[in-house]
Image 1 (tube, rainbow, N blue to C red):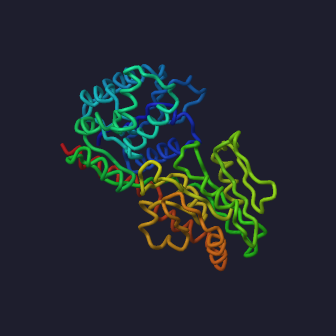
Image 2: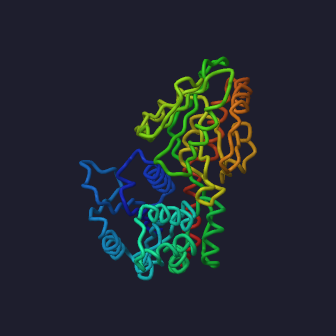
Image 3: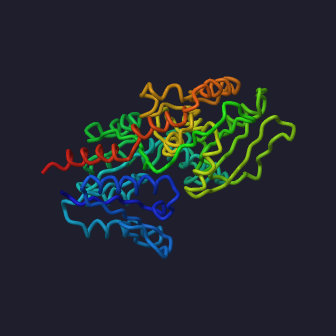
Length: 391
């Protein structure tokens, strides 16, 4: 059996509370339980922490030398070893790397890369001062009219050089195959380690409805603004308290003092602190504006974390695992994947109906454990690896 390395460029794996780190370590652990030899590798610009997690190797170098360090690492491997590489954005250095080592690499795709890169590129363009210089005008044409990015120029060629790719949704798989029709790929939605404990102690009568949304950044596709707009004018039998975990209160955030409802920004939390917050809440909120990066389907890690805790969800997209499984339907409040107002009275009535089952939290958590566990996902990864590395 070939050794497996899970490679990341950047600092994700050095932040143990990040969703990316939690997934990567959980996947490696599950693969080891299945009998494989697996190590994680981070190419990072941070100083080495005093204690490294087991099975993690960190190569510290300035960002401008990431690709040199990646090439050095790949050069040190045996020719039959497998590298699962979280796909970075397309670039000439990545193309150079896969031209040399692509037959050892399987990409993991977590987004429609061109759509996300175009979003970032347009935001960068807006920050540039107007100019009549040829370089500025060329950038404007490329960004605003031709929708051209490094992904659209180089992505398909990069995919042709590697063994294959794992996509976390069917929509992403269709996109990758549209870039290279012979791409060897499979769909394995995100999974999570089963370590959480549900809270099944709520009384049937509540003084306020506590909503929670886990956000790792201020990315536009989270869509918490939809919640703000919907709550501002919602007249409900009970007040709603919305807790946002992962972000500090933005300087320009304003909430009316006379509102029936309230919003709290709780900032970044450790994994244990997040679990403590979730234990106090009734309903969690998933992604509400995926349309902003031209997507309709996803399998967010944070949604899986909430489901494992037994929290019913408000979601605004099609979830690769959850939406396709009718057993989850009673626990999901589906809203359109657009900027329309959310009917908060219907949300309140939906949750009130769930309270008729005093064990709904435990029932949901048990279903999530059965469906979303990392052990089941690891089997899919290993089967795909074996299929594309047939001797």
